Length: 483
Image (cartoon, rainbow, N blue to C red; front, side, top):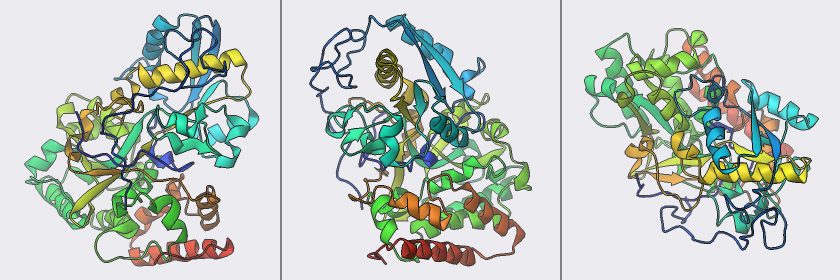
């Protein structure tokens, strides 16, 4: 399917974890990525081991099926998709992808290693150097990218090849290629909504809460909103909505937020981060979530929403295909924009999923084989489409059915930070302990805990977040320019 509007194909560094697909445990830009794509493929078209005009390894210089066909080697890929390592995975698993890759490159052997605690373990493995040739880039500072990873090419060059090219760029070079792109929203059961009398997709927080109440009134055995509290990482999916979805502003996350006074205050119009997290607090406080948040189970939730035992879950679009395949009622699974409307228009945060990084310390032969495999995954494998994601190859505008309800929604991807502030968001996150869109599951879990226990109001929670953010700004000498 083709989307009507997709804005801003740029994304900031290091703040992509909330967009990331997980395994078994685990004011906008003017760029329209549905416009006619660029036909430029870089300046090099060599074959054999000379895959760029000057003989230097580069993504743009690789011609699949022609470049590096003489390599015989084994590469090791470390990633978070534990589900894809299983023969029972309902989608296309790693073995199937590798078999297809070997039809084109039979002499490159690909070994897959997955990890159920990837976000934490990947940092340890990265620092030890013991991770192989390709890994999904974890949350590192951009200034450190060249210490660990091989550049694919210049930002200018890569921007003509892929979407979200600046996800992992630094000093004019690109160090990561996204595995797929994601939008942020809500997975829901269409049949449950219809049977409960909710005939229109909610567009505001109040409409969404009303829909959850209607579902509970229709059938009290259905869980209107499933939090997935116990697994922890699904809490990070709420952070993924914080910028484009709640503000419609591509500069908010990496530029304005850093300099905003009290960003978690109530703007009074159902927008901005305050409105986002209040949906969760109100749903829990009103008894519209599971009875015991400590007993939720991610793997179980997939089949439950497929069967209509759960009505909604706040997750990135990457989750849609998993929910569809989880049981026999995939036709009932839908994906909707998060219910926030700004001046009559809905927006959806979008950005890169985990990105492939190539080990700067691997042998030249393995680096070449690794880059070939990454480009094959991006251009030939269908991986992004199969996983319900936004395509990464710039020339590809074929979007999965997951985005059917997003026809009039503007997708907003974060613009990069201002020069000199590339790692300031990381610093403010660490000093405030909020870790916004960077693995900050604890703070979202506390919203659920306080709402369930009734021991702290939502406004008091937001006041604490504002105080922590302000202190971090003051400690780092950040100028306040946004009210």
